[in-house]
Image 1 (cartoon, rainbow, N blue to C red):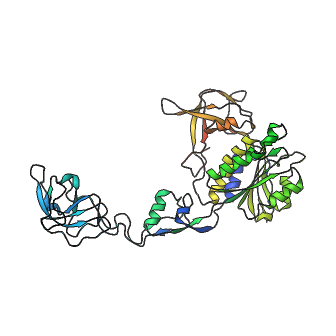
Image 2 (cartoon, one colour):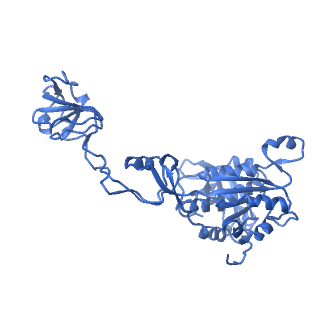
Image 3 (tube, rainbow, N blue to C red):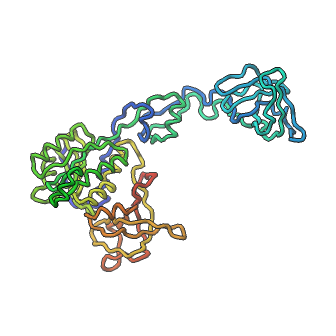
Length: 437
């Protein structure tokens, strides 16, 4: 792998540009139709048939010739001879001629000669159906020439019904099924290895040691796995590594076969922060090594040759820093790897309900709750402590207020009530192709 210079203290925009310029869709794979929900289509899908396959009825009623029912009213009905009965799944046995009608159900083929279907509510329902004496009284001509779905009006033979790059929702799967596709080629979703490290950490099953005052739960393992699941990715949890080179090396080796690696903690300048050192020993090219962002400045990115060239996202260890780092930098890259074009959460302008103060020299991401104002605009108020260790304030938030590094506050770093700033919607949809801030 070509040796690239390692940048230090890059801006948020620079870090995001480096990551996104490096992100590319994974190869495609064929999957059963019902397993394709949320995937990105990797091929154009064409129809081998017209849809509908035949002229069919949009109503339960009687197929007629429009000229036979013009002027029909409740006071002056038109009486027609019923010459056929066509339930859904059957086909007409004969055409409809002058003065004749055929009872048809919704979706059933419309007999030749008929050009409209009178809904059953505008008739007497017919009498003697199935006998030579069958008749129907028509009480309205409102449906004359209507309620027939023409052959091919939805899809023509050979038409492309789904384009490569489409995110497959329920409607798209329905379209694919309607043109006979039981399997589809889709962009493969990343399998993402997740590693947390720290001698102080235990899984939630070890909460007894927390109660004893000896350990803390590795909340980052669960939060990152959940963020990956929200994004449609498969999380491969590598476990909790101890703060030793041997343990970290053993856990990192478990990432082989994955498409990306996300680590939490172990990348700062502490005496036992060995993650970067060990990844570089595995051939990692570290593209940047700290970002001018709060929370989460201790954030790194690179590719690891010894693990198949997969991207590595090194996130900080503090819970809020980890989750914010994932939201701002990681999620969009993984979505791009899964074939999506729109990968960024929506950002909307909001006005502050409370004064906020920030230190200069970084882009800040503050946890806020959004409020709809009477004039339809949005306002935001902080959810509490903005410490990177207070995860409950992120749980109470529905957006991250973005204070760009180049946004000039008032003296003392203060943004007064009424200041306008962008806010990233957490869990927001639909996604956008540009970040919006």
